[in-house]
Length: 552
Ligand code: ADP
Ligand code: MG
Image 1 (tube, rainbow, N blue to C red):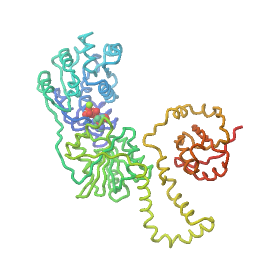
Image 2: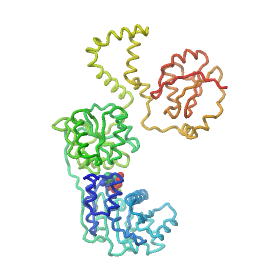
Image 3: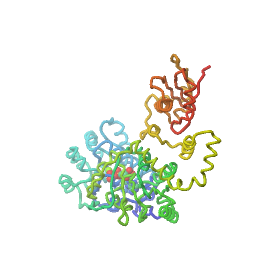
Image 4: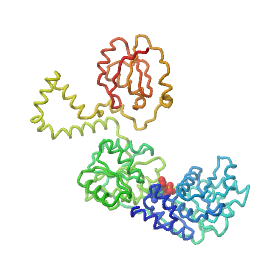
């Protein structure tokens, strides 16, 4: 293990808990975890105040797990959450952190689901109850002893619970629990109603507040983009096409994410590497040296691994995963804009992280402007600009070294200089899309197949043998070996044939995309000429190779 894992190991948690936390990819405790865990372990009541996304769940779940007596099969801890979704999330987190503690049983108790299985799980001795207040009160009405053995109570997102009107339910729940219990309250804000609850029901509580100081980051231009969590890698790739960066650092939350994103970038030809706490110190230093001297352009890092990293070449910081707190955001983006240079920071925000964005704006005292995913035209312009830039140094002297060869090739091939230059360009650019139609046809950001296509794909082989549909009059059926498994959809084929074949839309008949091939109906009239014209057409980066298809 590396030295950073000492961060969790130093907290005096049961080793099986530390092991599970490290296995989920956490490298070190977040600020609220660092400060709350020892206090909860020591038995204090606690009021913890920190924004969303700062890691509050583990801040209470880890010490609560540590305190569970596995030899007793009865409820020992109760976590209250405002909504069913949050209750389920917390229950899942408990299960994750308890992965290496056999015998821990968690029950989620929430409305909108039948009472029966919840009652059964409680009777069978679940030690941890994660509940919404309303449904828990229903259980208490049936059996007022349900909470008699519970000696740890956590109120998660207390401010939200009050906003949802759970005040009376909370009172009922407090009164159904032993007075000797430990009570921990987490909240993003502490309005007077919460303070009043704390005064009545907590005993000499310790306070932990993760401060949000205003900090300025003047030389850094900040922007954010909205994405769904599963589209982040694609969004990063698209953004990199248009961003003019020198060196870039991308922050993610887990070791696995550093590896995944770094290899996605490498696959697209970027000089990228991962930096995480699992990588030996001397190897990490090599990565940073490479970033400094230009052998690498992108480093994908966790916060821990990037600590102290100071590379003047860094022009961009991408926050691919949200930081845990505004301070760490400021810290991250401070990797750019060094020595008075300009820097750019970009933050990817998923729908549930929007509140953190507002906090960041408040803390940095700056507006973070929204950017959209680059349009195909912008991607194309950027690609052509890059190509031009790469050719610029060559046009000065390549003619001297390769001019004669060019003439000879043009003669041997019997083609115009323009035809030869175009052929060389296509070869040099490796099939990269360099016209608008092709860029537009490239994989869309959200690769959602239309339902019908999806069902054809999933039925695979069976559909392949399905009898062909009768052919339209005056039409010939053509076949290509490109199919759904090549990422082809009917509209890609249609677009390519319309564009490159110069046909009218209604000249093209039915298009059928199967798993390993596709069929297209084309006009019989002039078909050979059309197929010659489409000889070099590429779709999704692959040769179309459309041929007449004869069914026997
Ligand atoms: P909060 O309750 O404060 O909104 P969560 O507990 O839901 O925050 O945590 C937010 C995210 O951060 C979760 O995806 C969680 O897995 C992750 N996370 C929490 N603590 C750590 C840590 N120490 N290292 C890495 N990721 C963490
Ligand atoms: Mg939470």
